[in-house]
Length: 138
Image (cartoon, rainbow, N blue to C red; front, side, top):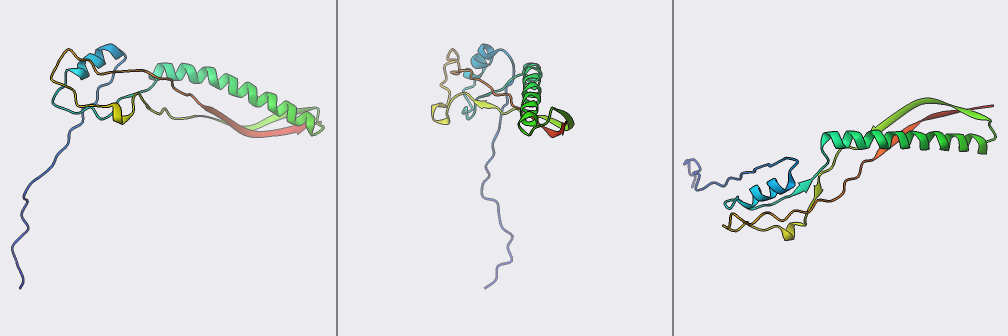
């Protein structure tokens, strides 16, 4: 037997995501605590664009100085009197959001509007890689 009836939708499921971003952790925590109709599934922290750029500027200087120092040591160990830097690439890692609390600690917020979302900031890592060619000179 063949049925020519079209399938029927018997139900549907949807989801919603509310993304709250800002610099005032206390205000965000209080606001998030007042949302009683949604489950808090993820809390993460990251550096602001300005803070990341400042940290990268500092780290780039350190990475380049370290690259030059290693080039000088390697040239000397190979019996050369100096070196010349050829093509160089400086790359900073993309920012990664840091989880503030494991998912097991997350909870559905209670109806109490006075209860703030528990927050705890962490640390961020800024990584810069310097790669290139060093030409050793006599």
